[in-house]
Length: 88
Image 1 (cartoon, rainbow, N blue to C red):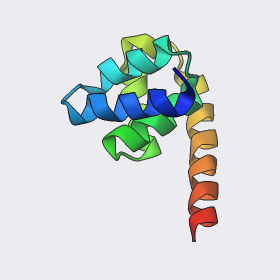
Image 2 (cartoon, rainbow, N blue to C red):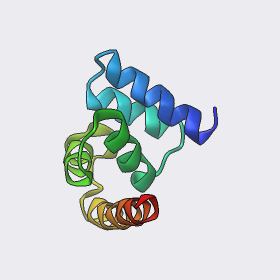
Image 3 (cartoon, one colour):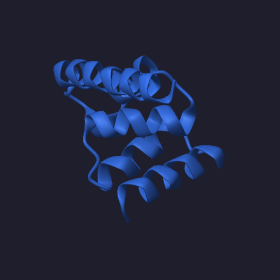
Image 4 (cartoon, rainbow, N blue to C red):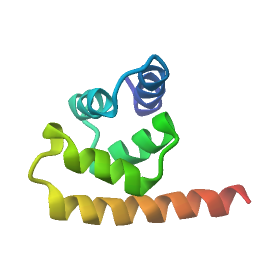
């Protein structure tokens, strides 16, 4: 499954009522890194990068990744800002 198809499936899972942890595990199993997982969660659940980071910090899937999550959230926030700038 390619990246966009995986993100679309994550969105479908969220729409069908899956909890963020289930989607996080799905993304991890699909090979998504922390940044891509945060961006996919943001899209799937219409949440902020900060909320996606918090969900991942609470997730057993990414347990022990605290400091790296901070760095990933910063990178994800920068990518979101770039994306928003490009669409305006």
